[in-house]
Structures are given as C-alpha cells and as structure tokens.
Amino acid sequence: MQRTRIKICGITREEDLRAAVSMGADALGFVFYPKSPRYVTPEQAAELCKALPPYVSAVALFVNASVEEVRAVAARAPLSLIQFHGDETAEQCAELAAAVQRPFVRAFRVRPDTTHGELLEYERAYRAASPWFSGLLLDTWVDAYGGAGKVFDWSLVPKELAPRVVLSGGLNVQNATDAVVRVRPFAVDVSSGVEAQKGIKDARRIADFVGAVRAADAIASSENQHERSS
Ligand SMILES: O=C(O)c1ccccc1N[C@@H]1O[C@H](COP(=O)(O)O)[C@@H](O)[C@H]1O
Image (cartoon, rainbow, N blue to C red; front, side, top):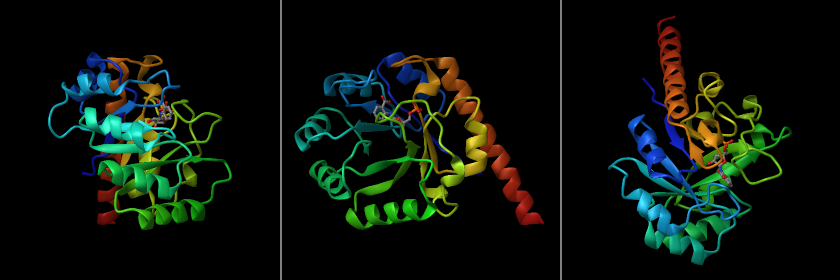
C-alpha cells in the first residue's frame, strides 16, 4: 500500500514535536521567516531537534533568506531538507542549497489560472538547475508567503506530476482524505489545519489529520486493487 508521507510544519514547542512524531509524522517543519507567527531562531530549532528520533526529517523553511542566514541555521540545527517558500529563483535555490549541501523542496503557489504546462515546465527547470532539487511543493497563491490555510483547485495538479509532489495549502482533517484520494500526492504538508492557534499545534487535530490521510491511503489502495483485477 502506498503510504502518503506527512509533514507537520511550523513546530515551535517540544510537546507539539513529540505529538507529531508519536502520531507518525515523517517530517517536521521549522519556519525561519521572522515575519511568521511560527518563527523559530536557529538556537530554538536546535533545541527542539534534540527530541527528534532517527528517520524523522527536520525541514528548514526559508522565505527570501540570504546565504548567511541559511548557513547560520545549517550550522546550528540538524536539518535534513530545505523548503524555499519565497521569491527565490531556481539559480538562487541551487546556490543556497549547494552552500549548505542540503537537498531542497521548492514551493510553488498555485493561482486559479496556473496551467498544467506551467507546473510541468517549472519542475523541469528546477530539476535542470540543481542536483539538490528534491521536488515541488504546491501551496495556494495568497497575498502572503504561506501558512494561510487556503485551498487551491486540486484539478490544477497534472496527473503525471502528482506522484512526486508535496500537496499543501489549507489541508485539515475535513479535506485531507478527499485531497489525497483525488490528487494522490507523494506527501502532504499541513500547518494551520492542525493548530489550536497560530504557532501552537493541537495534538488531537494532528492525530485526526494523520488518521484522515491513512484513510485515504486505504481507499487509494483498494481502488488500485480493483483497477488491477478488472
Ligand atoms: O507556516 C508559515 O508560517 C509559513 C510562512 C511563510 C511561508 C510558508 C509558511 N508555511 C507553509 O505554508 C504552507 C501552507 O500552510 P497551511 O497548511 O495552509 O497553513 C505549508 O507548506 C507550510 O509549510
């Protein structure tokens, strides 16, 4: 059975980190964007990461950060992946990732008029630009950089891209099963949908969210079996 990977983003407290890990999150996100209500300093992230068990990834989220800022984080906290969520170009992402020798995920904020061709070309350009490129994350276009809790039209995700993308943007326990069954992404990323308030996660919502994604995995698996046998 295909297991959709789950990232819980915007961790600011150790109890939230422990709750996400105990419920089976594959990755935890730390936001190094000072304007975010979920911002953590490199030192806070390093302290939080001490509670991370093996095989759970720590992801560093940046918005238009300088190479010095990215280096400062990489030098202090044991981060396995970078998420670029600002206006960085493919060349800038390539340079920043190479500077700290870490793979990266590139966020693309989907607009109502985004086309399949545009997304496929965007991914191709990033793949060509850097060996550190790990995949695309699709979020919703809003007048802010992210963490806004807004959903985009999932039919805008090309079928051939879906198995490699991280789906995000307004996911929560109510829509996660539908999102995963319809898009079948490689992974999902959630922040505000599992919060009690901005920057403070809710253990019950994390558990319910993980349950909703696993329910979708079971549906997708039985649909696959049905397709194979008919
Ligand atoms: O979480 C933030 O504060 C944040 C700030 C700046 C850029 C991205 C941010 N979070 C990312 O936004 C998406 C969607 O989040 P949500 O689930 O809709 O709240 C997600 O990928 C977060 O990693």
